[in-house]
Amino acid sequence: MEPATPPPLPHGAEVAPMPAPAATDIYPRDAREMDLCTRASHPDWLYMAVQPFLVAGAIALDSQGLKYQDSAFVRTLGPASVGLTWGFLVGGIYLALPKCSPHWVRSDPAEGDVRASWPMAVAMAMFAGATAPIVVGIETGPTPTSWTTEERAGRIITAGLVGFGGALLPYLLPPKTWRAAKELQNLRATVSQEGAYVSYGFAF
Image (tube, rainbow, N blue to C red; front, side):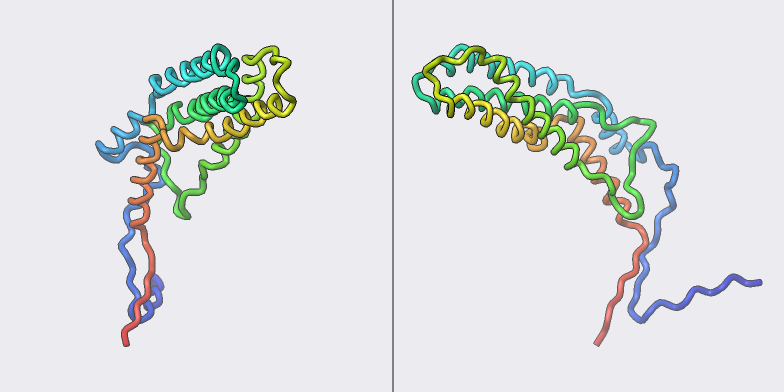
């Protein structure tokens, strides 16, 4: 019995050639992917080492200088700087961790990338926003009696809000692991888009 003949395509339809299936394609395909995976497979130690120093510097700046200024606005810059650096630390650690393995390189499925990075970013930002006021409260210590209730509450609120935003800052200034992993993902996504598809054209 002869195999059934596929139905003819509509007039003007074109079928792009489909590349070889890669169900078990879990290794780097070429030197470019190998280089990107190698860069993404090791923690960015320099990036991770700078972040605690930024937090320590912001704490020292607030506890030793800004906290004792006469202007309430200047004093508010202290918790803002602590919240920003603390959020940068919380959000940046995850991005600086290994994101690839030479023995397993993730490819997008046929239906496209089903993994989004924004849920993790929001979760880390919420964690940073919730913990930054605690850090500020500990480093502030006993508050002067001259501070108003609004200023005391403002320090906590400012630290939380800026801490939330600071956790998203590493996506604008990413470590090398995250940059290499995203470039590798985009490279593989570009290749996978060369799969089969049907397009229609009409001539008049």
